Image (cartoon, rainbow, N blue to C red; front, side, top):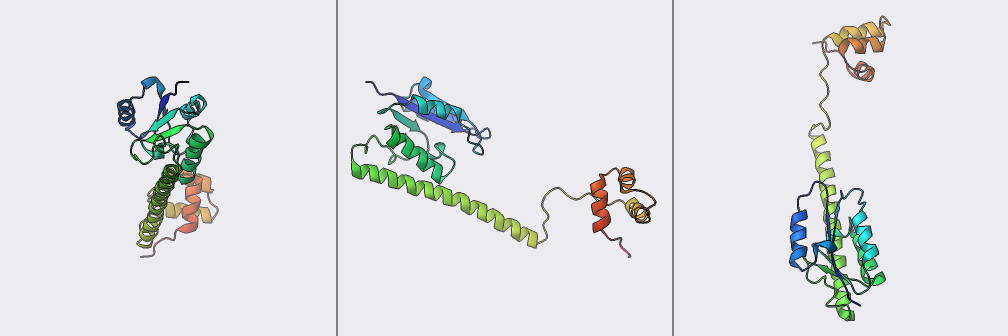
Length: 203
């Protein structure tokens, strides 16, 4: 039985590296008809071509990808996909960016298999940890900026001078909040938020 070699490419709609991945796989000798490409964001990770590939690969086949993070969104998912492909489907994996992750060289060698699995877990863990560190730094940066008085989100609309008279009329029940908002060309919610949260300057 002839074994086949397949390639897998994944890019998000914002990335521009599909050509780079395709070139690397073609240089590795993979026929273009055997290369499966998903253009999906990492957020939902809905991958129809990957699912199609998983149905087509057979024991003894080889799956080549440019980098390990093409297989999953995070540490846990990468490990799940790696074990599914190498253990359950008995397919070899070649990661071009990391020569140690080439199960063709270690598939019959227990020590080699252990080393490949260990390297994968370390790489995946480091990648996941770095993502978490980036998120933590972002949270800390936002908290520090807020302490300095930096405001986030859309800038608040300036309160027009006419608001204060309309606010007094509303408080004296001369007009409704809806009528006041219409006069100011703002939403009723905005008028009520201003009315409850802002005090007129006395100087």
